[in-house]
Length: 402
Ligand code: ADP
Ligand code: MG
Image (cartoon, rainbow, N blue to C red; front, side, top):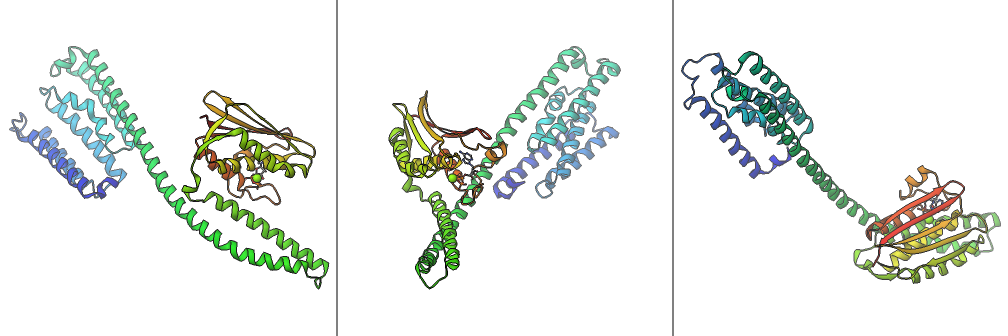
């Protein structure tokens, strides 16, 4: 158990364990009606106190699943023994109601449910015994209102279950949060390292590309050799593109301050920028933006998001298709829709979007969507895809409106 790594917690545990053991011993010796006769019941009680004490003292060192189950079972048996051995002490009944609460401390749902079921079975036998055998002779306080006591007992089990359910849920959430923080810390370091490496790779690439460009113009090379050289330059261009896209994700935080951006101006400038790119395959971009669409984002990142999405739409389009870009206000959101009539995507393709280097294009980098997802998440937006194979795709992005 991680909490015992902390010396302070260990100390507290030992203090509590000693108090519990002292109370159990006190129960054995202080004015105990069974002490004088030293019968089998009393000895059984004594043995249980001994075993439970040893288990409790060993627990921080032997923190295994089996040990927890043993503690759960022995403490259940202990409380039922008290109940049967000392019928005059009616408050023992309270402990029976609380038995599963002890196992909450292990924060292990299997042990808790085991303890809860064990206790319910035990109580059925107990109430059965009182109704059928005892007839209220020793347990008059239960027999007098048997149904009421049964109801109260099961109500207490429901309450204990509810407490467990809520605390367990919260603890699981905290654990997840803790793991995520650790994970994001690791990712951050890996990201920084990778960015440094990417940056270092860019310089030699530029040098190699420069020489290859010189060779390409050299007349002493045969045309087939030149073809190979231009292929090499193409590949280097792809590598450069991957690196610059990658570096744009790993940019330091302070370059990315947000501001209030008017969607119309950015959309228009991106459409102008990609106009000639679209013309390569005779694709036009239609922009249709409603008034009053303002969002809080970093202008450059927002531009990059739109460029990536609209470029994908153009690349998916057939000759002569139109790419529609629309933005409108939807209550407290601004929605931006980029629609193409291109090839569309299957469900599994959509699920793969955002995975680094996932690309179905021969010259694709597979980083565009990953960057888009990061930007959308950063500004608390959402992105989803309405798509059907052969019918095209609509990418819907929503950001909180300003
Ligand atoms: P790249 O464009 O470099 O391939 P992206 O991350 O931008 O990388 O896109 C990943 C893949 O998602 C693309 O290769 C393509 O298969 C698919 N894709 C993205 N947008 C669309 C779209 N509008 N229509 C069809 N497929 C798309
Ligand atoms: Mg792309």
